[in-house]
Image (cartoon, rainbow, N blue to C red; front, side, top):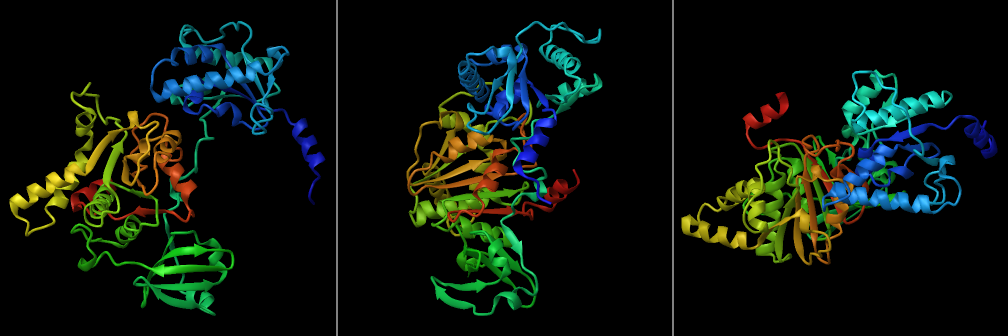
Length: 474
């Protein structure tokens, strides 16, 4: 039996709202987090506001987020005339996203921590606030929300509820992330071949199908059917009733090589079909180390810049997150400072430069100079406000970007620019980012099904048997 909305509302009113106490790192991670808790209430300790104040200066992403949170809180607090200690309704400020209340600490709270915990530490003062609220509201669930694992562990040892901030996650399990491919069953043609139309266009065979699976297809999704007559195709258009699919260009054959590089497996072939398609403006390539993400992208970029002249130049950028200890400031211009971070670029250019066996040493040297003149290395720090016209923009190591940083980069694209995001979400080096909340996972999920975007997850390593085995067992 379906309950009326009034009954459901009554049940919601009868059930006590949860009270979430936010740690500072949650606010700095997602400046809009105060609006992400739906009907539940939020409490901000005075120490959280103090830490926001300490982090607001500078040009880093953390400082920008701290300033954004401060502006958001100022708008909320300035919107009421009543006493703040009664809580501030978030419904109007959040434009309907949240219906709970925001509470700010308006009184001194005595520390009730075990003797071993120093009261001067900010984390411990926030824990004291949670203990106080739990005793003051025994009928409610008081939950600490923090991105700091040690903070959550300490809270649980004190008998408090604590959890991570999940609202920024695109998906709970990285295995559920869109792969860009779909396996077709052996009965696919039996269900979809009736009334099928087929025709030739630009060297490809196109089919218009009708059947139950058409509603599940996404634009630029690759379809795979193995067997006696294998099928590798891409969805050009899909609706609830019908779908249009097209055969692929075979980049595994030497006659279709891209800058001397041929695809070594079906996923690399799919990647080349996305990279070389002028109708696709945005491409995401995921895969572990050695699957060929950078090599395929550079080969496609050089071919379209130097041979077909579809784009004027290649621009490469990446996040400068060190794996080990930071080696300090680097000398030189912007491009020279980025040089040490671009070892992967130099390695792949060396491979691409050796692909022409008949060129000779002089020819290779001339080609290398020509290539380097058409490749520009840019830092993320200076991207805001720029517009790239007719460029082949490569964002490497994109798994270390937040969704906000990813938005900043992709919106730099002007007319006739193609954007390619490369990364491996199993190798995230940025604090507080996980496989589910990475900007790369975010754009893969948000762009799937868009007619001018494509994605493929590369699965087979082609670097060496040593690298493949190390990636598997280590």
